[in-house]
Image (cartoon, rainbow, N blue to C red; front, side, top):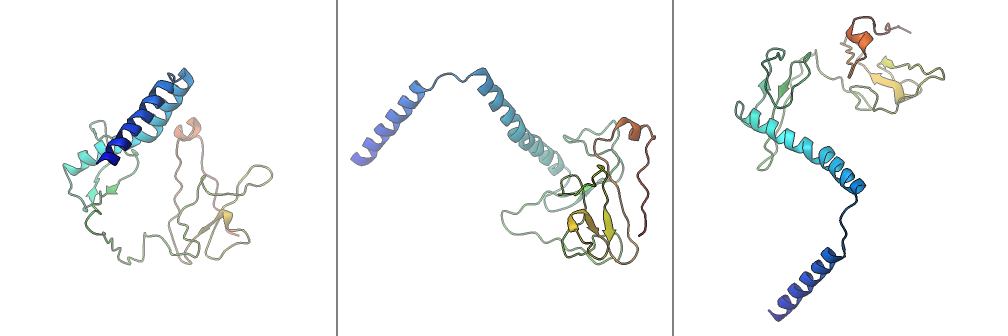
Length: 183
């Protein structure tokens, strides 16, 4: 007991010295702390409110399907993209794992490939041409460089282009995606 009391007093003494020795944070330090709180904590708070909202309508480990596009009456915490129908599920993994079994439908699912890539975008280590243009290779066999390769099945498949934060010319209908060229 004596040891615990001594350690307790030493801990309080160190804490008190630390508080006395610490000056008020500078305005720049306060700004940095606020930015970090917004960047890292705010998304967690919003996601928790989204989970609570979803839990009122759908139990854990079940999919909730959005049967129509959201309109001005949608009041979910996080508004999904207005052009996408979502099926979402909140998983409860604290007691046991959850298995999602996807049957082989022969249509509409990801194609297995050796590099496990099912999409390609600006976060991939793409290699641009000297003039700034970009060639993407959508094919079954691996090209010489896999950095710009989107593996595809040998048969027919669906290729989808998704634009995040599109520019005005796209929204106004004055831009078309480049043609897909067969080599």
